[in-house]
Amino acid sequence: MAMLETMSKCFSSSSSSFSSASHGASFSVPDPPLSLPSRDEEIAMEIAWIIVYLSALSDIATSMLLKGGILQLLVERLASSDSLQLLIPVLRSLGNLVSVDPKAMLTILIGGKNTEESVIGVLAKCLRSDHRVLKKEAAWVLSNIAAGSIEHKRMIHSTEAMPLLIGLLSTSPFDIRKEVAYVLGNLCVESAEGDTKPRIIQEHLVSIVSGGCLPGFINLVRSPDIEAARLGLQFIELVLRGMPNGEGSMIVEGEDGIDAMERFQFHENEELRVMANSLVDKYFGEDYGINE
Image (cartoon, rainbow, N blue to C red; front, side, top):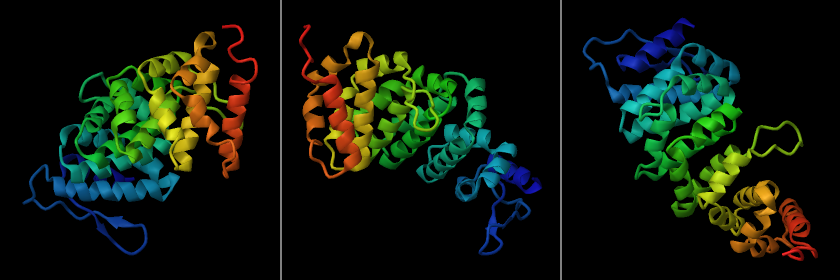
């Protein structure tokens, strides 16, 4: 724990660096040289990459990092730096830590305010960046946060990140659109265990669909990428099942969603074939449109 406390101080002040003691997983912290500037981003970058490594090493290592207070320091670095070389490892560290212990991030989320300095605020800043990698990393962190509790989801849904995410789903390169799809999909459902269908958060679903995201998900269904197509079909299922007054079918049909799903009628991937055909049969069968 003493080593982690030292690391937190180093990352906060950027006045020290780490060196690998061996080919294993132990690191030593040298005494801080007095000649270094107090906010040396190059050293902060080195420390951030070490945190990436440690946070991916094991849950035990991640737990020790969190107890050392590193999460708040990462958020502060994210807010104060414009260096792409530093922001990327900081974002990856955040994503790793949040995926293991979402409650730790919730503490910071609740303690923050809806400002540029808040967690979601600084992630939104990254989403607005011109750097493709930064957008993708920020979306990945948000997807990990959105996979947490209902409180996590509400925190994201109530911020400026929402219109940014919906816009990116339609306008970004493919890899970013896929990450954004995870965020938006996670925001619409409560966490579920096992094979139980997740309960839909209707307020979020209606808001996201009204924001114009459905065409972006249907484009993912048309993608040759299996993972992206699965994301698209899963969101269509949420729309069909969860939109109020049964209006999901009309909305999906209006965006040519039926045509997109029918391409899987004889698809070689059994999971996607069964998913798409089941949705078409259930919501657009023989009785569809009779009472209109």
